[in-house]
Length: 360
Ligand SMILES: NC(=O)c1ccc[n+]([C@@H]2O[C@H](COP(=O)([O-])OP(=O)(O)OC[C@H]3O[C@@H](n4cnc5c(N)ncnc54)[C@H](OP(=O)(O)O)[C@@H]3O)[C@@H](O)[C@H]2O)c1
Image (cartoon, rainbow, N blue to C red; front, side, top):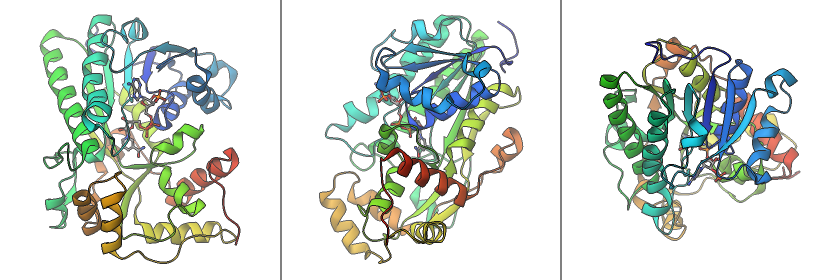
């Protein structure tokens, strides 16, 4: 295998989780950089899995669209990515269950992430052709709320050591999956195999290409649009545009010097500041204005099983801050402004009919 890990235009990249919100953007970005893409979905014969990818690339020039093909894989089925990764030089491993809570969090959230790493990385090794894997982790793999209270600015040296299956299964899943990815990467160094670069995005906003994308991070903006969130809890977000996340995946595959972890956080804002921006962008629309007292939020999270009360308490008590300098310097990310990200989120939700703006 070549000692160069970075890819050249014309080489082939498998994108896992291509049907998802982030995955569809990654496919589009890679094609735009002249890479060939195998978009890997659970069932390429199911139009609901391929349609989001086709929608994401629909306005690319035909020559770039021609570089797209589909493959199949299921994170929980060992060996199921072998065919999809055959002859690939790169992998963007985006797939995971991006949900905060479930009835059986081990089976529904943690297992797909952690077993998925085993399944996909084993397929990469067996391919004999994969030189680099770009692994989609999250800022939740780095956050420790104890440090946040001390005014800490998180960077790539930070690791989440707090999340448990009971308090935060998604944080646990992303942390365990990323740690396992680094172990497997280390074993590859001695063998002269693939290397791994990790992208840790914040809260992703941007264009949705399918109704299913609403289940992920766009749910918050959708809830503000529809009135499902009638008032504003004291929460803060480190946002990042899906365009920047996708560009980071492309650059991590294309730049030889890309290495280690990259925090991908653009504008930071409280939910109150976010709503103020939405009001300014869409003055004719109806937006929530009343704050929700913390006690009520905690009471609601006792019944709404999406988030444990202890995690919600930590989220309310902390404004998290991040240093994104490494991604700026190494990957050349320029950071989309929050207004643009909000506009793309709202406009695509409204145009798709997946969440409607309410007129005042
Ligand atoms: N959105 C964010 O704010 C954010 C922030 C940081 C990190 N991330 C990470 O970004 C990645 C993508 O998240 P997303 O926001 O795009 O969520 P999403 O829209 O729910 O996409 C998840 C993708 O993973 C696939 N997947 C789930 N279980 C699978 C399985 N058993 N086998 C094969 N594929 C499976 C889904 O396929 P189906 O369509 O078949 O379900 C879908 O393509 C995840 O790793 C997530 O942790 C997201």
